[in-house]
Length: 382
Image (cartoon, rainbow, N blue to C red; front, top):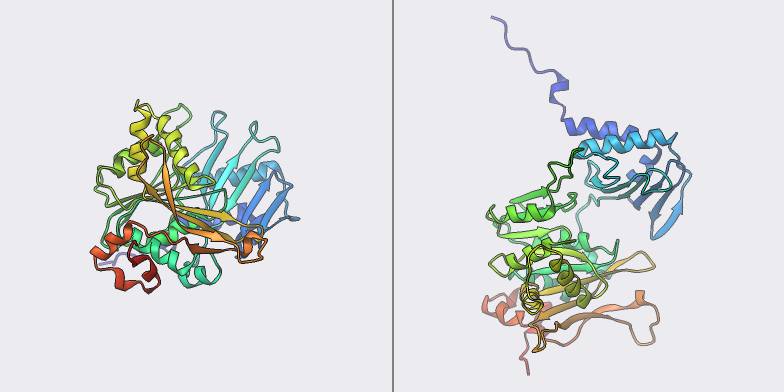
């Protein structure tokens, strides 16, 4: 009797591994920069112009693609990995590299320089909380405050400009979520890599050539509510899904997080309001503002400095609206310059002296003794 032959070696190879190797050949002209840990972004402006961001500086490299066809082939091969395709009706699209790096593609006629690719590299190594404090990204007191806020199921929004570190900070602090909870992550292109045991990652899908089959952030969010999530994390709120998020947060889905492009905490609330009004549900403005103030507990403001550092510059507690239905915020931490300081880079994140309402809840849960750095925040209100 002949024994079954052992599986061929090729059958044991992970298809994603084969694809990653194939993609390296397509992106060979810039692969050196994609492998370089000091490069955080690669910007391909057509086949003959490649910039990189390295140590906070934008530099024009001598990298070139052989032709525009070679660059287009690299783009199409990349999109095949994530099941997306470019069409005349959809000349711009988000994708990701096999290692998780975020990619944005723009094609003519929207891009006048020809095919353009922007690759935000994925940070492979884990983020060290001690290093975050040492390099000034956040203070120890502020870090501990956000940790217990997450453990107490407060809803956080991470706001800031492009490349300010919002997603990185969310990805890092998200690991403070208790390991027994079920997390649903919703993104246009998967970036978040939470090191937690029970995480479901949902990703949007564009329409096919006939305009069919599109799955939006809003549809994913509505379906996620039927998946018994303990917490929902939305990579970025951009449209009418803001109203669904607000209503979910006020109906038992606490401890959720998201990111948003905004320059200040008050701008963040105003942007959420504007996007909620973009939904197809009519809601009185006063009622909407009341719900927003009730659903968002804390806004964490990020900023990118000229020395390429990304730092938390403000952490604000959202209070109930006033009698005129205007938003109210109370700063818990703000960045302040030292005496005689002139450059923002010299600033440090400091406690404002405001005692957050969260402290009463933390004391009630007997968590106060866990964080010595927060002792001043537990002092009597008087």
